[in-house]
Image (tube, rainbow, N blue to C red; front, side, top):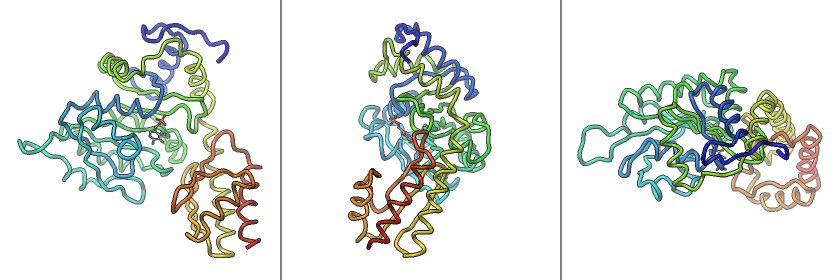
Length: 320
Ligand SMILES: *Cc1c(COP(=O)(O)O)cnc(C)c1O
């Protein structure tokens, strides 16, 4: 990062950003890619690129674009969300997409976009499920955006080439931090014909950055170096889940589930605050979400951290 070549990316003159965008486009099998400061901004930009004010987008109720982006599509784009149920495997049913699409009725908002997500809450959604809903959406003239913030985790888990997923979407966002380990940034990949639109909207949203090659250089390194190692994160999440299940079986006091690099731990409500504090006192800091605590493995987590975390859980249940 310290030695990255930089230029003014608003003018397309930052060599490090250009190299990152070229690499991302190539890997994702799209004609072009655009660098963004955050995944949230890239998703909003994609939505604004596909929809006009008064249009509607279909999106899973638990998906990030619906619930975790501060309502940006509606607040800033005048786009209505039409949230659809998300199944156990993270997918949306074809029947729900079909009935969600409003056609040829002047009383209705125009449904323009289907927004998908993979992985979603750690679950790798099977390619066939995405294909099925994408086909229905396409047949009705909808565009498809794939929020692939953690898409490479899905590819590793399902043993698919990333291009199998990106091919079904018009726009795909992929996070360079999260599992890939860069300090920040997201790339939005799409067709060349959309590039100028996306650059204009990114500028509108305040995402045109100047000498940002210092960050892009880390993103390029992440793409080149940190994809295949995601399987280590998955293995460590499995190890931790197994250790916690062993602890749980002894006392029957924890529910544990795991998918890709995420482990969800649900203690009894009476244990929640005490357990959280017990772990924190041992240096295991977990977001205090309820009822499930979410633990995510990443390139900063080693086998010894998994053992230490399991030990901290065990000591809570043994001391009590
Ligand atoms: C993290 C995440 C985002 C948003 O990324 P930010 O860079 O934090 O704005 C979007 N979608 C999913 C699925 C994510 O996990």
